[in-house]
Length: 163
Image 1 (tube, rainbow, N blue to C red):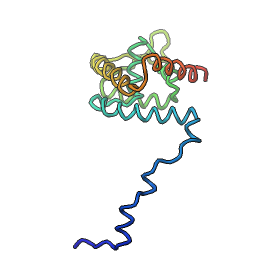
Image 2 (image 1 turned 90 degrees about the vertical axis):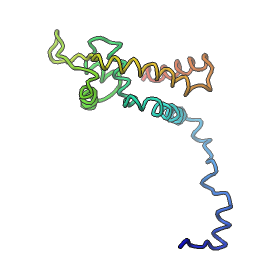
Image 3 (image 1 turned 90 degrees about the horizontal axis):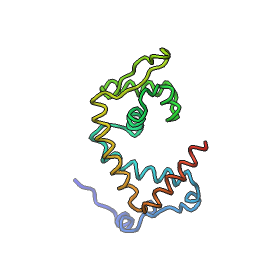
Image 4 (image 1 turned 45 degrees about the vertical axis):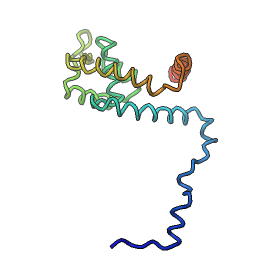
């Protein structure tokens, strides 16, 4: 049997809740990191919706893009480029290899390294995913003009390439 609400609980339900009001973000909105993170979360939401069919996390897409663009890229170069620790790169590559999207081969000049290559399936998945990523990036940044988008990219790269 449904419980009856007391008159005091009914009045509380009709009052605006403090949790529904926006919090003052003024101390955070002046921080580059906070703004980058909030923007990233908006883009990530669109990414998840549009890229779900490929079952690729953003870092996995990045790996496929780098391998496709850099023939004979090795694990060490990949690790350095994405700033991911080697053991984590190995796990990431294990997952992509298990899905038959890429292969690791012993590097011919230096057998200590594995060069990476996309499989035919990996290339097909990457090309389809790339078209989707390009589209979703435009969608996620639709509030920006082309010149603003270019300027944002330039400024963000200036920050991370200097670090």
